[in-house]
Length: 317
Length: 311
Image 1 (cartoon, rainbow over the protein chains, first blue to last red):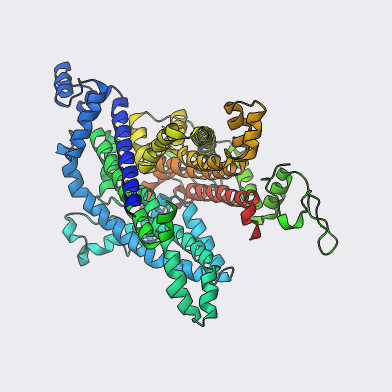
Image 2 (cartoon, helix red, strand yellow):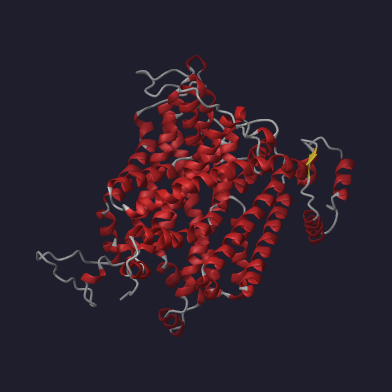
């Protein structure tokens, strides 16, 4: 187990380093150079020289990267001249809001997708299975922003029962009765796509386990149908779902970006989108590093969990 | 004969490939591996439906404008956001373009970007994965860590950074989408190459004096064709969705060019005005095309993977 952990941690560290190299290369590719991109086209040569010196941009390439890495390790993600705030400070404000949105929608998606996939596996090739399979296929093929738009048209424009804009103001007020209805549509838009994905995997994971020998053995020993289903099959079928959760983190982050952009939900995705439109590169690259590291850590946790609950993984790896 | 040929209903074939006469006296279809794969594919009614939809969409986008002529270059401010009528079956948009005609023009861009980006990404990814898997050692480690690192950055974030940095035009968008999409085929093909490179036929080629170059291009990659084609189909669907999302977020092709995502982006401001023709047609066009490509991909997976043919 220790060997597995060390190897897996090493891999993650290398991937994180790789991500910093990519973002570093991206900063070098900025049109007109970093200083021009950040200070704007009207910056004087003296300002640019000063900026380059302050940020170590007059050093050789590998030293620049090293400098960049040291800054990152110290938690210095850059400074947004456009918003006149450090990227770290902006993230402190926006990241918790994204976590609320992602947390609620992912938990909700799991709470619905797991029983749904289980039901589909048990009643496979029956009417209800076909119905939900087609439904998730349609949801899965739908552009997430279009789904969100339809939700807005239906619940906000036609029925006028839910606000089309996400909650605003301080994060502590998000769960207040006055604001909570604003959370419904963003959460639903994100959760529906995740449900479609997870229920498909849950269904096939259940099907894989239902034909295993241990199910027959348990049945032969007189365990009831529901006993086999809940105590044995469900527990084994859930294991790959944890890995899937880790693997779909990048997709979930991308979904949050779109959802936040549509509902004007003031999280990290909206911050990122606004920055993309105003070409605020420090924010773009800083957020990219944070999201990528979160993805790597999520994958690592999922893998470690997998190894803890399933000894076969440890032995094989 | 090729051992790994995707063969339908393996149990009905004797080792020589001669079909066993099944009950009812009917001989099963026989022929080349490709023929058999095509047979399984065509047996799948959903796949045929998907294929039919793709053909319809292509005809609609590329032949449609020849029959249904509209001005998609000059705006007409006297004719904005008109409801569907005889003159404009799907109404007009916020600058007076006919929506039905725009759907065709936008579809051309969506399909072109989707197909070319998928082709580029697949070609590059396959070569990358095959080389990494075949050569192995530190080069494999280096190449795959590059893939891992790029995969760690959520697609849309990477795309938005790139789209913000480089002025989007159609070729640039194709390049940007392909830059993000080649990672998955690279991983898949590397995995297959790892298991293929220790096969006897690779040794045989080497004994006969074939170069590494020849082994990879003529023997390893052709043996992964099933995976390549299935993945390429899904790549097209993904690329169409990606390009739509990018355009929706305002970083797509500049007007008067457009694509389905861009049309939706223009229609968003009229959500509360009840102008449904600015939102449903473009969205449905995306859904139909993506579903069609996904159905084809699913069916091809069934046709190529012998393991799954039990279903």
